Image (tube, rainbow, N blue to C red; front, top):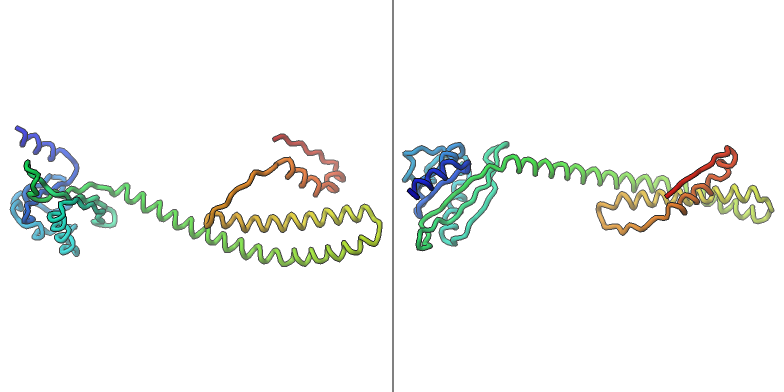
Length: 239
């Protein structure tokens, strides 16, 4: 009764299973395995290497060597096997013991992992595309920062010359305009630097620092104060 129950249990599962003797001949198999290995009832007793199937094709020596390795080491081996472009199996090769814990053969189970494997491959593909995109972003940010900083340096040099001239005259309005100009240049330079740093976030760790929104807003309002005053713009904010 126990043997019959076990037979029914194996046949009812959707896991392909092959039982091999110590000489690697076929003892029994479940119906689910016949979709992978072309086995017929008359193949019981035949060596597994004589059976034409998708697993052995092109890798017969490696497969037989793996089976013998499990027999000697008595340690299970688990492998992912690609049977075709759209069929992946998780193959477990385990020693088969009798009631005295002596190895009498091998049990091979095969579970369809196609959906999981294809999903994993798609995730890896997206990750590779993201990595390439990030590299392009970093390269662009580096070139853009280099190209933009060159004219900024020239503008800053002109500001220094202008600053020297303004120190010789007392013109409060001109000084305010100059200060706003200098702040704008400094802010743009900082923005370009931060853009470059941000593009490198994925390649090295960055310790983010708290940002005071109130102070940031005050800096922006001070920078554009002349325009805001002229246009009578009122700015309100709450944080």
